[in-house]
Image (tube, rainbow, N blue to C red; front, side, top):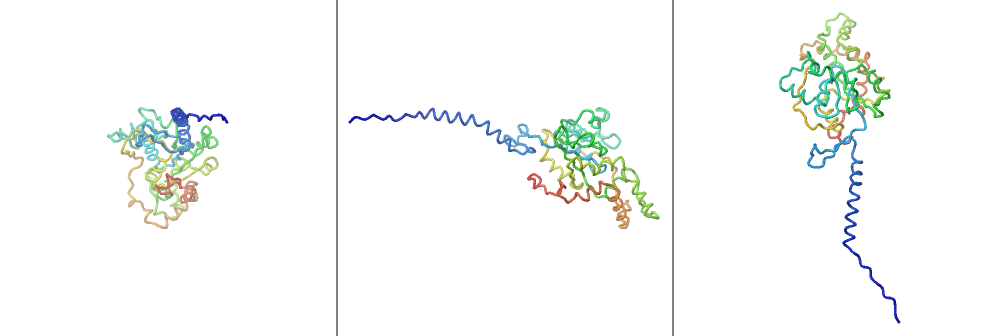
Length: 317
């Protein structure tokens, strides 16, 4: 009986291997895209050996605003961040010229109270006129303005539909008071014959429309508002922002502080020797100013940025 012969197919393994290699090469770009899509928007991905010249940075999906309340270290915060990170904008520091000005300060250029931050002569108050040329290239905006300027300039708490989150530095009310006295060259009247006379001297130190009007609880109706502890401004807060902002290719180090106050001598400040007056002054400040009320509520809450330790900052715990 004759049957039909069966033929075993011959597989060309060379073609199969070529097809597999082709398939892998075809899918690699898709895998890279997927990998980048899972990178948090506030982190850098380095190609090798933490080489910052080849870093891929995903810009944050939020813009940070620094409410520069007078005498809370805001000039230094703005300057440090502009020196360390890109896309920082403020009247006391812009990323585009921060390196140069810090180098000048390190080598003896006199950036003091008298001549501001050195921008006046050459740049014509470039930092102060930032409103004239916009904030579209800024990830961090520091402003010494009345609180209403934030709501007027960033309608709905956004810049081109990107949410803005405001950061408010919180300083102990009495330390803040005495720094303001120092700045204005005034003193507390610890020998006053009445509480009213004493509080007049307190009120005389407060910067008022030039400083305390930079914060209002109205801001919370338009923006997410967080706080940070003044004592941790240059440590924990800067560490926190390092997880949010693009690190500069070149950083001028060390950062040169620019004084805006004369040195204080707490031994010459009579308030610290009078616990009774300290209590009266603190109660007055908390009652009169929304800034202190906000800080009293915010510090220690989930809205305080600096309540977290440094290790937890990067993990978002």
